[in-house]
Length: 381
Image (tube, rainbow, N blue to C red; front, side, top):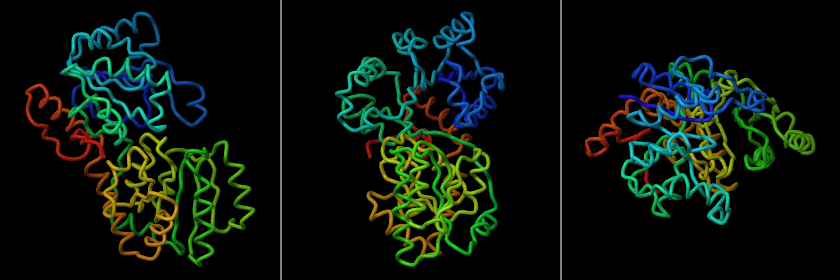
């Protein structure tokens, strides 16, 4: 079976899945990179991996490579179409209604009023609505809220499947992982760019209230961004220098070192966060996660009250934080269940296996045998 995956450029979020696909399908798998990684991404710590792997076809490199990418899209048995600036690679394939998966998050991540954004409306029409009657066009959901958005307008009805992102899965000894989290204080971690929609100010608000009520804790804030100086000023203003460590930018591979020793991970992004790969990493590192419920990956990854908590407002965030601070048994149960979720279910290996099961069930017109995790059926939440 020849399978091709088109996206803008190869990233560490997609690499484990691509490696698994190459292991399984060999030269019948291709990752088609449609543009050179932008300089701004390189400045954020991303690596240019397009030249590192034989399965990557760099369509932007020459007219010859571009034509090869166009031909491949038509010749492949299955195409996964991710983020690209143009749909020209699969235009003919869609006309012929060949088996194709859109790999997409959602269309109303800025709210239902996004429908009145002409640019967004044009994208939705050209990529999705225009082909809503195609029998062989399906959706791999890069956000658990994708079915909500698309189904509302008659697109991908009963044709949505759980997907997301698959960063490296680390395997730990569970007892050793819990031992790393034996701290003098409860260690809380926040990771992200300091942007308005990631709400780093909520961390300051949380720390102030925890300190006021006498809790023994420390918070590591990892990342950089436009609000960094403002957050530093607030830490000084509210005398939180002993409670909050403003770490700054940290290499991706070293972020895990912080997570492994942390008890609680909080994710305060709003619904603009289409997935939140940092959730995968925190859960894999055995953190007891508390994340805003509107984040794209939360309903897929977090079984509320079993391997983590989702929250709806600041009061809810605070109450769930103190519950985990005060209840070590629950905190550790969340940690182990979080780790097992990522080690056993949301892996690149499992995604590859379930994708094959899904493809075969579509071809044979049978029920999807993938029952949980990536490749399983996704419905409005």
